[in-house]
View 1 (cartoon, rainbow, N blue to C red):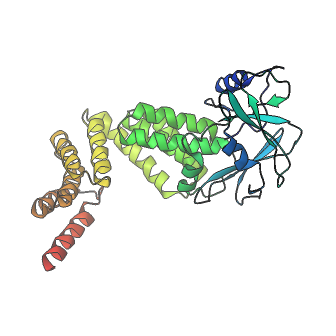
View 2 (view 1 turned 180 degrees about the vertical axis):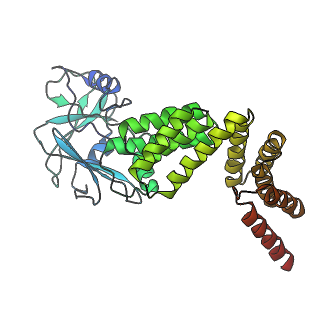
View 3 (view 1 turned 120 degrees about the vertical axis):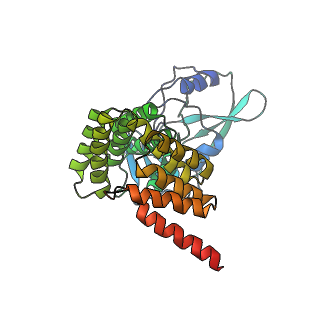
Length: 341
């Protein structure tokens, strides 16, 4: 990630001033800037650089440049083209011997820039600084992995996606306060993110913040009424809110069901068994605890116990609120297939 234009240096600045200026820089909502290496400068300005329009791409016009971000490339990259080629020479952080660093003059795309060497302690009136920083986390890769339905239109959306990945990790670790915080930060950058509203709604529900949970999911539903998942989640939150009002153990039991699901997806079957056992201890009349227990027992090849737990889940699931019936059918089929081998 590049600043896109030079940062202001006072006349007669030396390398230490240029370096400290980047380090202390806070722009575009980002800190952690530094001077680029010579290789980084050459990657975006030199005879071997690729200057092309990426499609779809994120185009961010800046006073002196155009940043192009390709989030569909298997190896996401960022290219910076300088439109104003009168910027003079730039500091790099690459050593060129004791007390010396490389500098390079910016030139039009396709031409070879002039590389020079200067003393780090030399005061200069003509060297400028452009600052760089790493993607944090790799926003381009996260955007690519998210398979957005429409092209990402800017850095705020990329940053929002990264925050939501972090929010979902926090929710999976039962850190619902962190999940809420990250989801809110993501929504500040991309207010119409259905994924962000969903994450905020789920984290709020698990923490017992019912008003925020319902508000978030209702907003998501209003943005896309045809999205089945959002509609299902909205119904689920309303149901568990009602359940929690009548049962002091309900919210804790729901978190444990969530823990069992996360552990099951990670194939941490012993952890899933422990969480399911706690659900059953808190809510012995719920089918969810027995359903999760049966699935986890199947994961450790305890087939008879798994079938017994799932049979119990089916008997308790009077209103077909779980997948216990299908889970029992699948488990019996897996057991049969293994016996036939």
